[in-house]
Length: 161
Image (cartoon, rainbow, N blue to C red; front, side, top):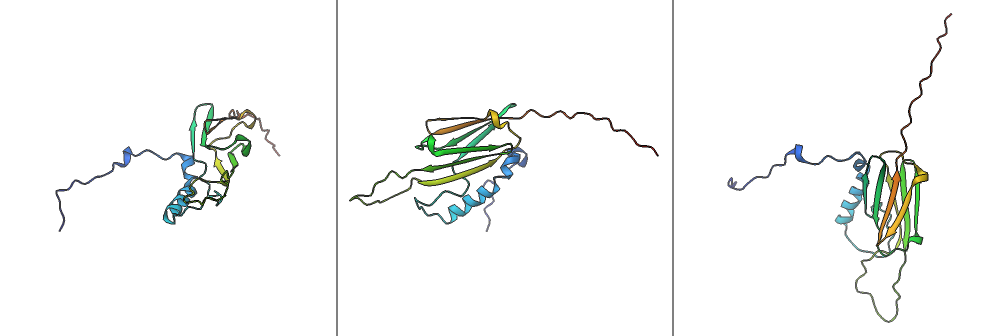
């Protein structure tokens, strides 16, 4: 028996936000996250190689991309950033500060070990102008866009026989 007095929620597809082009490239991290939630277990010393750490936000202006990554408690000396015209790689290591003495460990949820994140960029960037700043656990990377090249017209001669 169906109760028809309950309200039905229908989503208007036109009101849903559109996915940005580069979100499609993050599909793998979505699948990794689903499997992680399905097989949820915590191992504090397993390397974070899933590709979704550190969590990031990336915004775009007319002249640049601004990427912010959460890296609390990490010494900036332990972070490496490599940039190509179409992607950025963030690698690093979280040092284990826990010393095992006479006390046992009940819960270990904080991550320790190495991590790597590769982010595809939606447009080419000027590698020489990239700047990085680390403050209060947030790594901010400014990636200036390259100037679009203007095609030069070339006259082509026609050979006649």
